[in-house]
Amino acid sequence: MRSHSESAAREAMGRVQMREEVAADRVAIAALAGAVPDGSLHSLRRQFSVTYQVRVPASVTVSLKRQQGGVRLDQLSGRITASSTNVGIRGSGLSGAVTAKVVNGGVQLDLASIDGDVSASTTNRGVWLDLPSDAKAILEATCVNGSIDVDDRLAVQASESSRRRAVATLNGGVRIRVHESTPSEWLRFHFALD
Image 1 (spheres, rainbow, N blue to C red):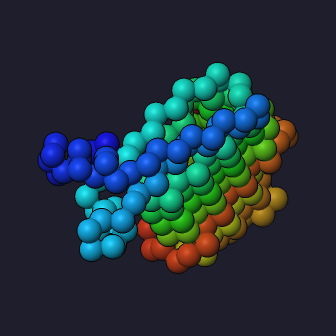
Image 2 (image 1 turned 30 degrees about the horizontal axis):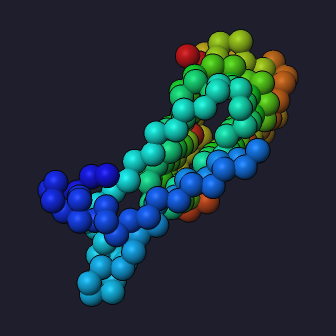
Image 3 (image 1 turned 180 degrees about the vertical axis):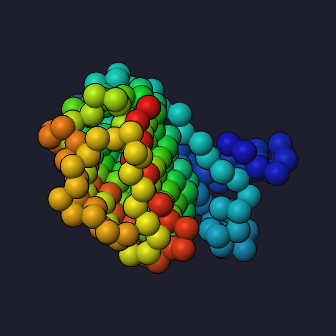
């Protein structure tokens, strides 16, 4: 736990309850804040932050949800679902099926291989996908504002292409869907090779 001082961190820790639920098919971890002297949970949230570092076998099914923080995914190959509010999702060395949803943050994924459908959606930020050189996929991208950028090195066959919508085939394969739903002047979807 981090705070502006060690004593403040100790004090805040006394008001935070760590909850863990374990079942045969899932583990849930949560930090629940108690009330501070003025009865406000909001002021306690400003005093500290909690960082989770969870290690799992690479091929396990992973589902992560953050309310006020980002998600980082490294070297996973199972079914991956991640959602975040107010900070983005970053992933590297991913394979398998990936779903990433963010409100008020971006998505940046480096896919080691594409072994299942990939879906990335954001509100108020962009999406950046790095694809392996042997990628086989059907790319679908839509945005409300901004633009869609496809790396020139990707040998895609576009069936539909405009500034706001693109559908293209990259050697056949699984679907990669990308969507941004709120106007953003600088938004850019980028599909690129490693």
